[in-house]
Length: 117
Image 1 (cartoon, rainbow, N blue to C red):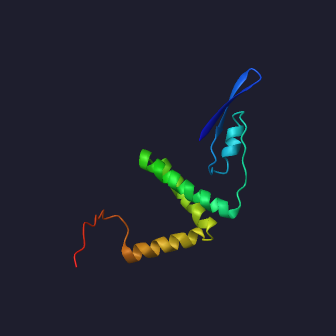
Image 2: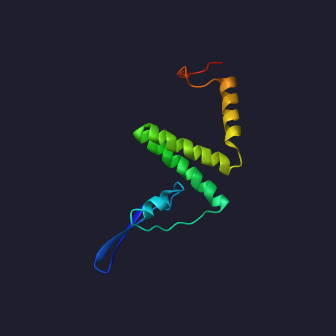
Image 3: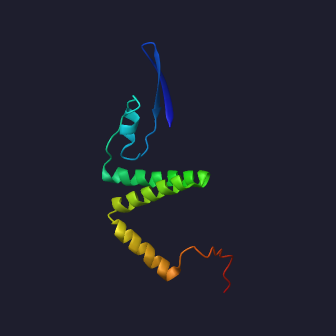
């Protein structure tokens, strides 16, 4: 985020630069407050890069706040990443379920300390 402060007429105007992937309705929500925003539609290759950046961002926010809203944001970006990489949500769930059946989930809270030969 970068803040560029300018004076327009006699009104002070702050321009905040984000350069980050946002949810589809965010520009509409911003404009409903009387502000304007500049956006662009990303080509697929750049979108994949920005989805990966967004995953890191949302994971960091979850680590900081540890609430259900941040978990929901993380899940939304995971879903977007799967679709962007050509997978269906059904495929993602199938692979998750297969891995859980073969290797288990995390319900038992097991911490592996070491393995000896």
